[in-house]
Image 1 (cartoon, rainbow, N blue to C red):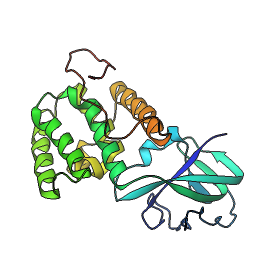
Image 2 (cartoon, one colour):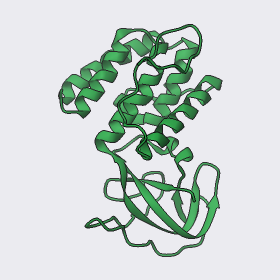
Image 3 (cartoon, one colour):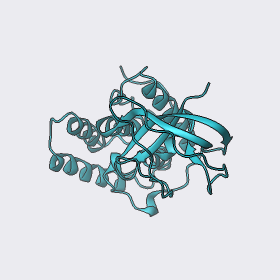
Image 4 (cartoon, rainbow, N blue to C red):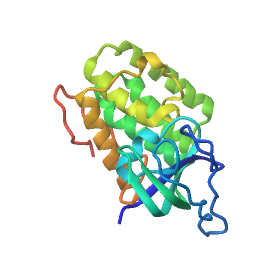
Length: 229
């Protein structure tokens, strides 16, 4: 049986083009079932996703990832699943957890840019998530990382993998430093990075791994999946 998830704003409002508002869990109990509706992708139905679809729906405004129960009609629409009935069960990732997840996405490609400012910004994100530094210190570190990224803007391998990380992590990881011009189409390297992000997110959602634990890999001229331990 598939596990399903939903990404909403903190109050349960839709954050990817919809206008609805989900009924939130209360007192340790699941939220109430949403009213039955017809299923027509992008037009009608409750849009949820599996673990292998969720990465692209992260980022932007502060949000929550919920475990979801579904019933009735279920239609797989490629990048999402549309159902006739659903309810939120409990939050599985939000706030600090999402911030640390975003730092993992950035950490996994940090070896492609050896400028120390890049890793300093990732460390600052984690320190901020754990309450060790304030927002001003975090923002200063990311401003420096932005300069480092600009210095490497035309480095194709770094740009492709970075684009994948940025697309997934959105404003949470990079403090809205990127504009549309830097969100280039991903090549094969970017696709491979998205696959890694999906596997890592699944491990986080299932409790197999804690977010904020991915270490910087060794800089190399060859692509490697080995992490520095």
